[in-house]
Length: 123
Image 1 (tube, one colour):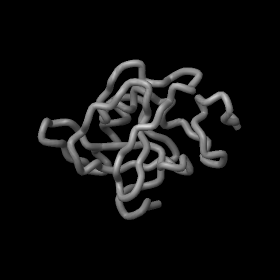
Image 2: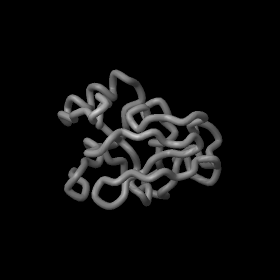
Image 3: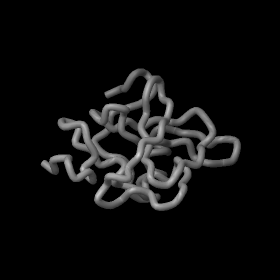
Image 4: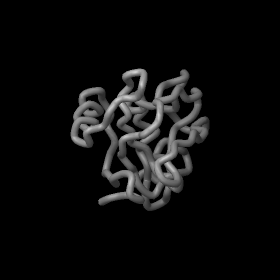
């Protein structure tokens, strides 16, 4: 299913480099001016869906203690994950390394929360 004309709703995001490359190839994502793959898979801003898309900008570095979400027409924003039980990035990271932090993409779409949050139901 398409999402706001820039991405696709998926059941899960890649959790390994192999899955990341396979998904990027399937979507035919390009690379930024530094050669970084622009494939992205993140929750939407209200955590009701996971969205995969080819990010049309330079793949940036993001701060430790944060996950990414998409909003609007494919913009990325950092949100704090310091309330996670585990899995919150402990070092700064590039956007194309998100597959290394699966807690940032494991969401309860019904309750609109990250499973790693103590208050999020795991069913």
